[in-house]
Amino acid sequence: MDPQDFRNCMGRFATGVTVVTCETSEGTHGFTVNSFTSVSLDPPLVLVSVDRNTRAFEKMRDNHFIVNILKEDQQDVAMHFAGRPKDELPFEWVRSQYGQRIKGSLAFIECSPWAEYDGGDHVLFLGKVHDFDYEDGDPLVFYGGKFSRITAK
Ligand SMILES: Cc1cc2nc3c(=O)[nH]c(=O)nc-3n(C[C@H](O)[C@H](O)[C@H](O)COP(=O)(O)O)c2cc1C
Image (cartoon, rainbow, N blue to C red):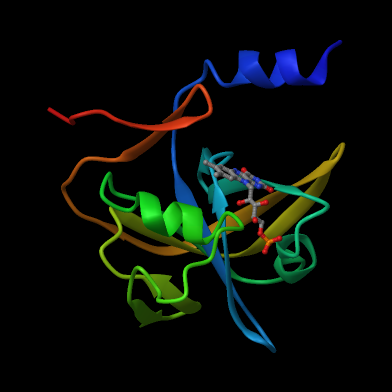
């Protein structure tokens, strides 16, 4: 199987874009994630799939985390946390129960660690949801390897 072709195929699945934040001894770590998915309502569980080669992988282990779902005008935030950091932060932090989250996001979901599963070159982190909130707005979308927009009706 050609890995790049497989990647192109997976890119046909349109997703939202999130930044997952977690607290460490070095401060707040954030990284851009589109593998976020809802798993269970009872108990409330969500999942993110994390590349073993990221710095985030070690920071996520047995740690609380916050999923920040991005709005369409937060593409610069997504790039900032995808290895293209800007000198000046393109957002403000908000202090939350389990750490810092990103002001102006479409939604946030605060999680405690629930389980970790082997996912090949990734690890699947399941979190138990303790708090969340959301607002109206249009989401940032990732499709075909590019950022995109849809208008929510
Ligand atoms: C739109 C988009 C979605 C991404 N989704 C994921 C993902 O689901 N899991 C992952 O491990 N990395 C994902 N990445 C890549 C990480 O954001 C990137 O490797 C980041 O630089 C990791 O940061 P760190 O090594 O400082 O933790 C994504 C990048 C982009 C641009």
